[in-house]
Amino acid sequence: MLQVIMPGFAFAHEQTLIKGNVVQGGFGALVLKGTEITNKWGLMLGARGGWIINHTFSVGAGGYWLVSSIKTGKYSPMGKAMYMEMIYGGGEIQYINKSDKLLHFTIYTLLGVGFAGYNTFRSDYPDYASYHNEDSQLDGDAFFVVEPTIDFVLNIIQHFRTGLSAGYRFVRAYKYDTLKSRDLCGPSFCFSLQFGLF
Image (cartoon, rainbow, N blue to C red; front, side, top):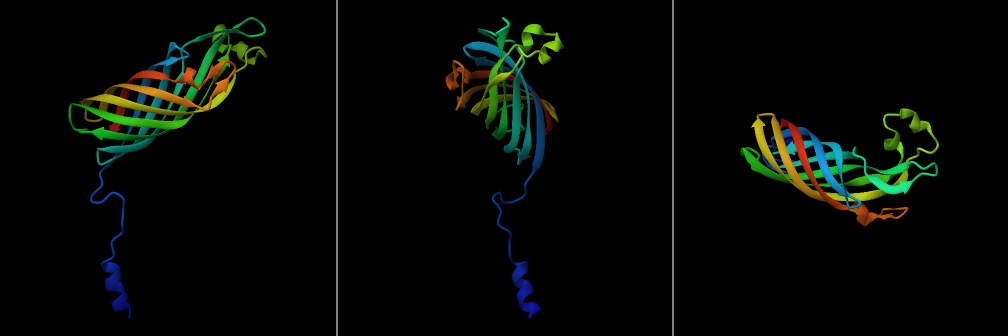
């Protein structure tokens, strides 16, 4: 009986989405992003990374934090200037075109969530005691974000690349004070340092 069953298993093949030999790799990147928020330009720091499949696709994640001071024109009850605060991140999928070429491009999209609002922290910097002042409070709302980006990549050495990219951030389901979703939408331009097995 076993002799009848076992040959059947020998000829059975596992079905997979990606067929043939799969070459795997991965990368991590530090990102400096200039972007428009509330019709003003600000600077964000971030990081992204992912699992690379066959030098052509990657699945990963990224996140960004607003580090520059963008005044809102509003003041706290104690008269302190209020500044924008923004952070967002999520999952990413990426298409990589001709990764082995000296100069090539990738297209990726971030889909995730974020938070934006007002604070008075930056007005007292570097007076960190202001973080504990009841007048120095962070308040805002969460949002959904989709950010498609095209990245032009230069291969420096085998495991190090740089990228210049342009994208656009679409924000939905956000409303705080006089701010709405459209106030957080805007273009972005990035410079990245990329490390990994490409």
